Image (tube, rainbow, N blue to C red; front, side, top):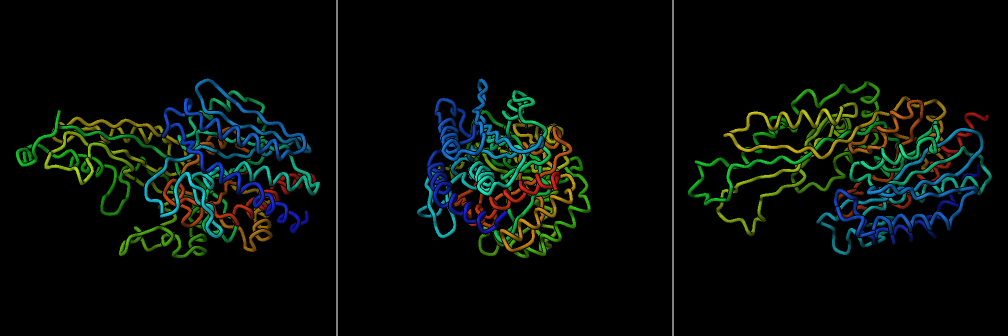
Length: 471
């Protein structure tokens, strides 16, 4: 394969077609079903699916077949099947649904307002991970442009990932044997430690979460009259959370939420820390004087990838400060997100979380915890020698630096499902979410040069996958 020709093909495709299409995509607020219960009536997810469908039809690959899979009451899925040489199969994955708006976007930026500043395309969803279909199909197209052989490639683009992929198992079951038995899975929904080399995700954390509700009164009362007699629901909630988390250190206390960290993952974390240095924490927008939970860089990576962590991500019952009168509130509700180690069972963790929080409530308060999130983590199988060499060669050819490996703190529910369904498959999990790209938050952006180089890397890996059995 001519590397210069590959890069020229991919760069043109990104500049002339992918970036303009992603800008149109950003403008559509197709929020995931968990954040838009009226998604079916609104039709925005269907609108994006059709736009992606049309783009693929206008950039045809040899023998390509496209199906929009629709099951009653479930989000649609794009299935793209590109025939190849031999009987082997590559499965490629991405999603097109988006997180909600989030406040705090900088002046001139917004979630549904595409803006290019320098090498960055700002707006919700392009990096997480609307670019995946375009990059994956363009990688195959670049191979076909040079008549480079590849195996059959099946691409699945779902519309429910940001809601936990609860529709995906039903669609996969519906498709049955149509997917085949892939020996390589490529997912483009992950992150990168920097924009200087190819980063391969070695593990993903799981997730358990829900809503904690604490009630002591049927209505609010004057705090001067009740303070010191009626307990504050916020204090009770804080006490309950201390059963889960040491508030001084952030350490999660119940052993059930922990799992052993394999030595290989500890070594990879140390190597990643040596590459990234202080950027591991410096990339976050700390306020003046604030800093990370540890000064040990390897420890920070392991905290983010293999240890549990609790976040309070929402609240009800707390009026805005400007409207807060001297009232002892009747109820506090907190939405909790507990990140779990890759090997931790999320359903069991959710049940344990409920049991711990609801047991023996202080002052006889009405306490309930309703789990509504449970997503499995994932730990990659050991890399086959051919894939390890391919990743190294691709990174050096396309980025000019060696490949790097690190776990991710987020969740891709599909990976755990695939790991169980195809235990013999090799995995390339990667993405463009690097420093400051801020997926799910304000000022989310896609680093365009990384998208281009990653597309080239994917093309090379797909070519090497075929060559490994036909050399």
